[in-house]
Image (cartoon, rainbow, N blue to C red; front, side, top):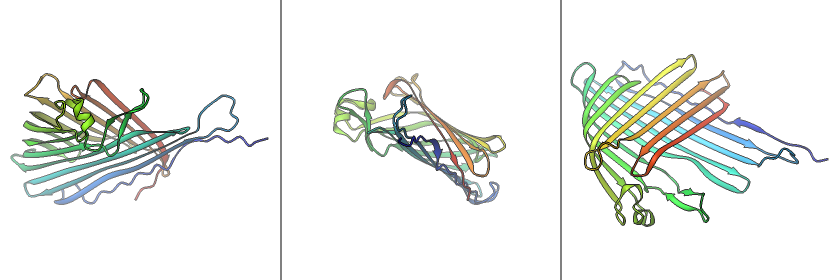
Length: 280
């Protein structure tokens, strides 16, 4: 009789958290999370059915904060990648590369004259698997988004801040001939670049929901003055880190997107991972 083997276990998740300095001290004070989530299911003579699967997700979410006299400079790096393999088919489940940076010169107690820049893209090809053969829907730098502009920053702390930029330039890059020929992501067919001028609002709020449970909220809004300013682009991210005990932690993340140039529907992604935890 063959040995029956089945595992359904989230493993390999750990969170690295570092805080270099107290927030009210001048200089650099950095913090962040690095998470790895592993999921496996295997079946042998399992009459109830099921398919062998393997999934791996990794996330780097790190903040670099600088304060000196009347100057502040906050930068956030987000890198995420995930793969899922069911039977012989491997699909991408997450793919993000984002850098957001804002510099502020103090105008009053909590207000700063600011200038911000943001860069977003993905690292590998994305596909539409609903058709045969599969069709490429995205590549590295297809699309890529670059936004920048002057504004005003309201900053109460590293964990609570809002930046308003009423004259923001936005570049959409589609560095792929097939996608640009189709006019993907709002570029004119055959063009690789789209320019927009509009208003951007970015908000950040991180708090402890309860002991050992932190919640990070990131909201980005953008309105293009040059084309349908009433259609506001929305990018909302929520990441919850739950430290169950000394050895186990859980991550729960939501990403909600709306960009009518890419898709005239709300895009929603949810990722959950549970596993072993190690702090350094």
